[in-house]
Picture 1 (cartoon, rainbow, N blue to C red):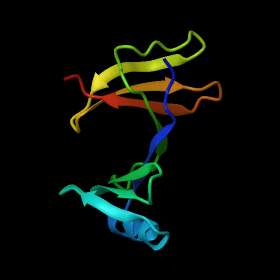
Picture 2 (cartoon, one colour):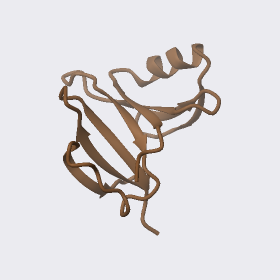
Picture 3 (spheres, helix red, strand yellow):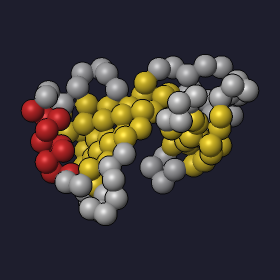
Picture 4 (cartoon, rainbow, N blue to C red):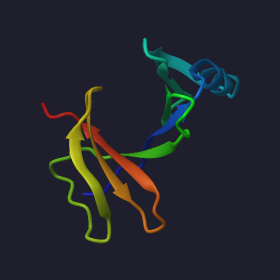
Length: 114
């Protein structure tokens, strides 16, 4: 089983409000915000952007999220370095982290188990 393309872009920021406003001026609409300075924006049918505010002493990171329809059926090729296997998240999905040949981390996201 292969991935189904880009699901989302996950971004960390030092200022949730400014980051959200930046993307809104580029045509993204706020789908929801949380009570802990994070939220999701979308522009049309494309991948969503999820932004989370982090403390000033941390360097903001970003991660591209690839969609996997079924975590249990997904078997990565031996050429794919699995950093963390699929794990349940607090927001209702299962995620795996993999590393590409250049050292970048990618997230594979699947629906939660039923």
